[in-house]
Image 1: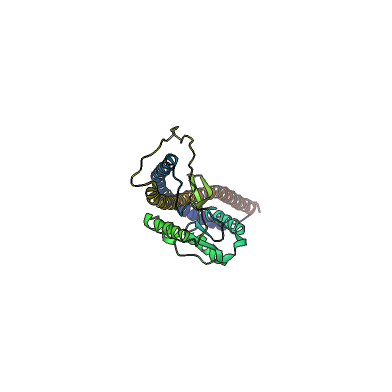
Image 2 (image 1 turned 90 degrees about the horizontal axis):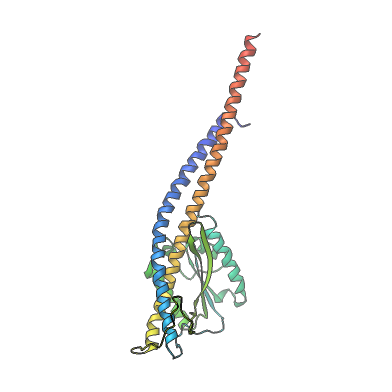
Amino acid sequence: MASLKEVKGRIASVNGTRKITSAMKMVASAKLHKAQAAIENMLPYEKRLNAILTDFLRGIKDSVDSPYVEKREVKRVAIVVFSSNTSLCGGFNSNIVKHLVVVLDEYKYLGMENVLLYPVGRKVADAVKKMGFKAEGDFQTMADKPSYAEAAELASRLMELYKRKELDKVEVIYNHFRSTALQILTREVFLPIELKTDDKPDTSGRVVSDYIVEPSSQELLAILLPKVLRMKMYTVLLDSNASEHAARTMAMQVATDNANDLLQDLTIMYNKSRQQAITNELLDIIGGSMK
């Protein structure tokens, strides 16, 4: 059995760690409330924008002529992957990196030079570097402080490359925020954009009739599609940011709970050791008086 001094030292160490994890949990929780409010305010706007686009496409009779919907053989692909800049958030970053490895394995037939990686967050940027790939830019500030301007700039950059046919496909990999306890690893195609033009009722049960468009449907789509894509990139950024803070909140909660359990065990051990030491001292005193 460990000595009283050793057990007491371990109790002090665990207690100090518990204070740190508890404080980090409170900080992460405060950031989560802010990030959660941002994504919950943005998602309805993005969904409504997509609904407007879908309704409009159901109503027009002309075929959609846009470089962003053109599908072609994949010879060069770009992958935008989102992580955090710091650790202590459970499996948030490791799951992203593992999934990225799986995706890269799918595209290995293209060659490293034809797979462009856009890592948003220092953790995934470091992983990309270790894999031998060159990051197509530094996007660490986006991971800490989500900005529409930076997200829109990245989306526009990818759209321009796709428009010039320097890219044939763009994918995004991120953690989707479902709740504080659940973040879903998500992989989506960013470009080409998928357009649903069937005549089925939308989610509200409406079947959209013909639209009268001024000046033309193509000019409207030329404005609406880039806006949808920029908004999509910003929404994914907010989603990943909320997931990061949720994962960190849960990780620090688990660490604090483990520290509490360990403190309870160490306290019991300390009391037993102390009781044993007192019993031994009493036995020594009684044995000495009987001589």
